[in-house]
Each structure stands twice: as structure tokens, then as C-alpha cells.
Length: 472
Ligand code: GLN
Image (cartoon, protein in one colour):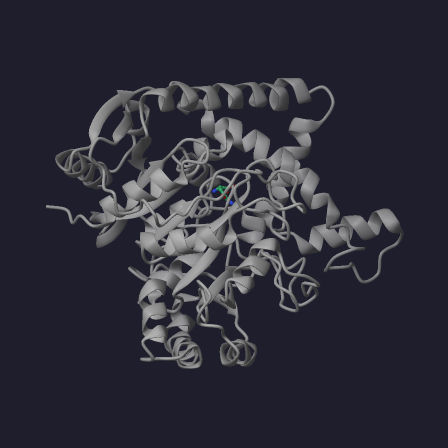
């Protein structure tokens, strides 16, 4: 059931928040031991909030799962890491949580994720695998894999995720749900544990496009506690969502349909684009010539920022502390050695290297220059089009364990999602049929919709039109 439907049922007196949450807990108990989307949930606390829910508010009494890197007062926040597990409880609410609560929502459940959001499969969680509800031998995507899997599994109505290089859109695509990464600065990052601060954004994973609009409406806006938020008015995202695509200019970049795309993904996305054309959209060929450099650019900038951000985990201030250090340096050393998993260490080493004197200009400065070129590609493109459509990922969900020895394969698969983070533009994933892949049938495919800065309203409108279509 969507949030919109659940809300209508509350208002019609057909069910209550307490009933909905109790039912959700039953679903979690029956299915989540297999899926592994939840790290924890506090039923008593949620029932308490449900009893006092104000149904007149836009999200009154609606339970929403929270990715485990978003601080929620008095709840654990482990970021999927042993560094923080069982040793850190949030002393405050992130701005998005405060806003969700003000809108009446009930944060319910901490969703599994790749450690510190580094990954594309949720296999880097220090605690558990999350399985794709469409095929339990496959990854749900990542890093917001718990959020996506729960929504797909019917164990959450909706959830928040975070997206640094695709971590909302790619798991949404793999699990067949809707995922929205807002414009950089549209949603406050205050209280989101930082991975790469110039790229991170929080956004919703939902069953429907209307639900994504509903959550975005509640969490968007300027925040004095995050100086990178934009001081721009928040439009009514539902007002124009049903206007359709007649006359809307859709850009198609050949760089997003090149080599390495699974034929089923290409077919589904192309046929959805033709259907939108049939509804009156105008297809415009465009070029994003620097796309091929996006993955390399991201894997310099994101680790660089991560190496700096993660220096706060020093064994003194948060979480894990080495038991018997010889001295203070040994305390740092041992705490970090024991607390971080292998992928996080790889990123810290990579990031420290590209920032080190002698290499800074060759890697970090150069990556920033390429980032500017990628941003300019989009600026040019959006002079001629309203949105850009593409696949979200080159293939449907792969099998669990298939990239353990070769993380580069996962990095390369971020090719279509990373550019939006580098340019700071919004992007969405909308379900776009299913296909066969690598011995499995009926695996979800996602259609990506990219829009210019603060173009969320148009993006949602195209998403809603695409959602209503079924493939021939
Ligand atoms: N897969 C990318 C990475 O591993 C993106 C992660 C994210 O968006 N948090 O860095």
C-alpha cells in the first residue's frame, strides 16, 4: 500500500496508525529474517507515537524507515559500521527527521546499508546481507539497500536513503521501487553522517511517484544548520504532477546508451521513451561528452572527501575505542584498524593519497576540473531539453558475491548515476518493467529521469507519466 492510500484509509477511519504499525511489525517478523533490510526497529516507541498521531498533518501517522546514517534522537545510528555499532546513540534529530516528525510521520526502523554508504550492493554492511526481494540470491543494490528492499518487500511503506553517487536511485532500480535524489542543497544534510559532503543528498524511496513527492515536500527547504542548503522557495510538488508529458522535451544522450548495457535494460528503457513520445513528448538527441570520465572523477573526489570526513572517527569522540593502546597514536591506529571494514579503509587510503602533497594537483585538482566540465555538459543540454532519460544501471541486480574480488566492476556500474551528483542536479529512478539476466527472470529495471537544478517538479511530472505506462 502506498503512503497516499494508507493516509486515505486513516482519514476514512478504515484503519489507524497503531494498527498499521502493528501490521508492519508482523510483516517484518515474517519476511525480514530472510530479506535482512532492517538493522533494528523500536515497536513500543512507534506505537507510542502512533497513539498521539495528528492525522490532519500531511504525513500524520505514516511510518517511514530511516537509513542508518541519519541521526534520529535516542536511536542507534551505526552507518552499517562496527565503529559505531552498539556504541553510539544519536543525541539529536537530523533536520530531515525533525521535519518528518513535524509533518506527522513516525520514523520506524533503521535500515541496513553499506558501511558509511560506500558500496553498491549493501554487501559492505558490517552486520548482515540484505537480499533482493525479487530474487533472494541477488543484491538489492546499495548503499541504501535496506531502504529499497523493505519498500519492495512490503515491510516498509516508504524509507529515507542517501545518494552520493547513486545510492538511492540504483537500489530503487534493482528493487523495482521509486527513488529520488534531490538537487544538491534542496534537502538539509544536517544530521546525515557525512560521506562526501559536496555530493551527499538525502531523499525518499517509495512505492509510487506521488509518495516521493509527498516526502520531498516535507523534507525540502533551507536550513540554517546546513549552509549548503538553498534559500529558494519550495514549490508544491503535487500541483503539476498530473500534467503529463505533452510538449515536454526529453533529451536522449548517446553516451548513456553505449557499450556494456544489458539488452533487456536497453529495450525496456527505449520502449518506455517511445511510449512517452506517443503521449506527446518531444525527443531531442543531446550529447554529454564528458560522461566517460565521470566514474574516475567521482572515485577521486568522493574518497578524498571521505578520508577527511572519516578522520573524526579517531577512537576518542565516537564509538569504537581500542582496549589497550600503548599511546595516543596507537589508540588512533588500533581503533581505526578494528573499527573500519575493508572497503572503508580502501577509500580512506585512496582519498589520503589523492590529497597528499605532490599528488593533489595531479588527481584532486584535475578531478575538480573534469567535474566542472561534466556540470557544463548538463548546463548546455538543459538549454534544449526539460529532462534527460536513461537507464539507472547498465544491468539488473547481480548475484550476491559476484564482485567481492573485483570492486572495480561495481564502481564502473555507477556510470549513469554519478554524473548527477557531480553536477548537483536531481535524479529519479522509476520502475520500467522487468527483464531476464544471468539466469533469472523478472528482474526489475529502472528508468532514470534527470532534471536541471531545482527541476524536481518537472522530474516528478515525467516520472508520474512514465509510472502509469506498462511495457507492450
Ligand atoms: N556506489 C557508490 C560508492 O560506492 C555510491 C555510493 C553512494 O551513493 N552512497 O561510492
